[in-house]
Length: 121
Figure 1 (cartoon, rainbow, N blue to C red):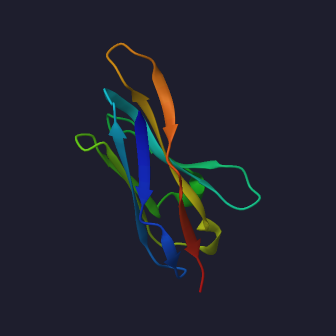
Figure 2: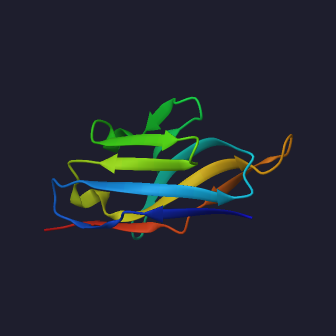
């Protein structure tokens, strides 16, 4: 069993900052990509930022220069530092990890339960 648990969401004013964290636990052999996705009401879930185990990153154009993804491979955690937040960043943010649970085993995608981020004055 593998679990991803997010934390750090909340209510923030426009221009403010939040830091999201996600911790993976359970029967983990290795983790490849980890990342953040978000889903606003009435919209499809979209990629925010991802990072490979080697440190390569990918960001949505809408968050480039404002959000920074980081991860600690030893602790199986990934973080999202969000600065200069805008009302359009309001969404439920989900952590996702591509995880192998045993040597030479398949890679599965796991999702966290989501954390709400609301940007409003």
